[in-house]
Image (cartoon, rainbow, N blue to C red):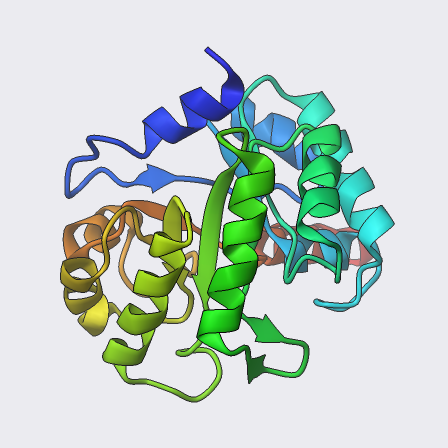
Length: 240
């Protein structure tokens, strides 16, 4: 099987308390650690990669992001999906080509502009449809819904956007920042897999998020921040 087919299959038939947990590596070493721990696939976080490269979230040049993804892909044998933010202004065909050249099996694509301005959902759905057409079945598209992140807490708005994105060909929908208490409503209103953001050490566990409706769980830059704190503790110990 192609890696993209393996990745797609991992989203199917999940039990409610067994969502697909996708750690977010920020470099080759962290990717190897997660693979050696037994995770069947990985999903890079744009913010985590940005911080590892010395940038703030949303400021990583496209070439550096794709190069970082390619290094992570080369370091492991498991499928790797890549968060490529809003697509860096690339035409759908070029975006798909860059992802495939890097070795990614899928991607996150957000529906907001820099600065937290939501895109027009119908225009964004048309763009996603073009990405889907260019990719065929070679990429798993995870369509991020940013309403909860940027001021619209109405679950129905997220469900409306999700329906447009699924109709455009998205394989999965990612209502980032959705509160745990609205996940059952989102699950009932969204066709297909739902990606939920978890905060390590805070809030519901991945299994609990699965019971609330998550098909898959990702962590954004949280794992990098946890590793950085562990390194700070080591540094403080050395100074002491």
